[in-house]
Length: 241
Figure 1 (spheres, rainbow, N blue to C red):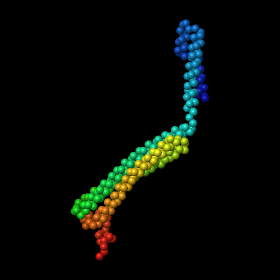
Figure 2: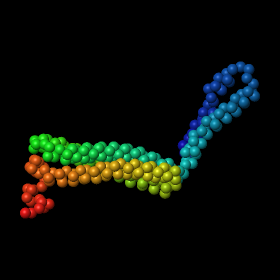
Figure 3: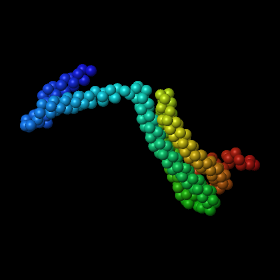
Figure 4: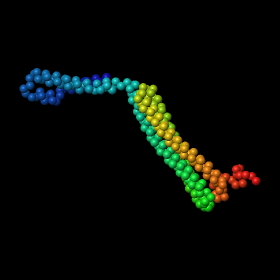
């Protein structure tokens, strides 16, 4: 109110001094008293209109309710958390895909190794086994990467769920529905990729079992300690004489 009062006093002072265009008109000859009164009235009207502008803007700015401001804020939060969830979902899916590829690579190497058992000398067996070990290290590295990103994705998922709940509680129904729909979408996407990686892990376990069974029959051709077993005489599956 004090600011509005100062503005009005400033406007009245301006009107008492007169607008430059009206002062110039007074100096022109031939203007009647009626014309001067019309100019004065015009000046008062323009001044009143100018003085009213900031007061109206202040009234409009104060017309926003707390509920409206909360809804606007919570909508921004749901947008931000949805963006974070999208980015972490993309990164996780990419990491899971790379991990799945590494698992299938190792499955292929195990199968090739099993098929070559008994057909290679000890040096060739050792060389192939080193390739298998390298593939296992690569698979482990990619597994650790996807587990790290999975942790970030879970955090982003919880944030999105909290934002959706906050939107619902504040009455921002559209923001809440949109956020929950996005959450369900990314969950289904990640689940599909997880199922593919789990299928690959199952095949890897089968290939390792098959390799182990064949390796037991070809124990003499393997490098010392490759299978992790003890001497053949200590194998519980061998028949005792």
